[in-house]
Length: 362
Image 1 (cartoon, rainbow, N blue to C red):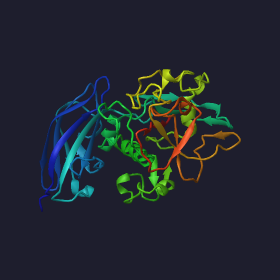
Image 2: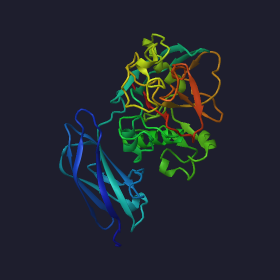
Image 3: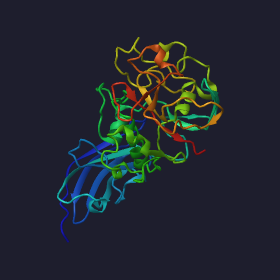
């Protein structure tokens, strides 16, 4: 049998920083005929999730998640030394004689049926958006905007302008980037991805070249609203949560009538982003829904429809996607819970970011 000529250039490890972060160490790689073994030590307080990502561009990005693996990988990996993963790269479509970099990520075990760590349960209810009454079902929403560290852990890159602190929100990302992040993170955590591109499925690695370079392609993305993976909130989910959900005090900004209490905006930001969670939270203990970075929503931008609605998902046609919340570059009037704007799916700037949500299965 022909020897598989796959050279592993480097092996990285990554621990997601919760109170007791799982840690990968002492990683070694051995190539065999037809397969590769990766050995490592895992330090953790309890069973955790181990993910393997692969780069074929010298470590510029880690966007491939192997599926032909066995051993100490996936959910419920126990702590210990000498853990081993077996990988069959050719079965995953990897070329022989090619150099690859591997990254191992250890995370606390995700649960598809309970509130995810770092998320807030937004209990469903009805509110008025200024035009009509809207009823929203219960969902989970990240209490923070996606940080540069979280984005880099999934996508392998950090496109942000304001670097130097991975707890700042990621920016210079497009709506397409946010969609891809959601699916790749879902796959890493063995959740069902929400987004599909035409008939190419849910794995962005299988989407056609150029899918994310033409803004007109944004209508080719569809959402499975019952999938348990990560997705962008709808505009009305975002607005309901920003107002404080069923605990709302009807503040002008998300959590206060005084913009500086809850938002990094042009009056206090120094025209730069700041680490997430640095301002006062709103009634639901969600941070930065006013200011810091504009947050991408799922919806195609359009006029609010009249008449009562339940879980609306926006217009069915249009050129742009909704963003909400204002940013560190904006005056206070852009940071209100009712303010809205839009971007094309390929637009990026120092003040565009996003946060994610998941459907509640309770």
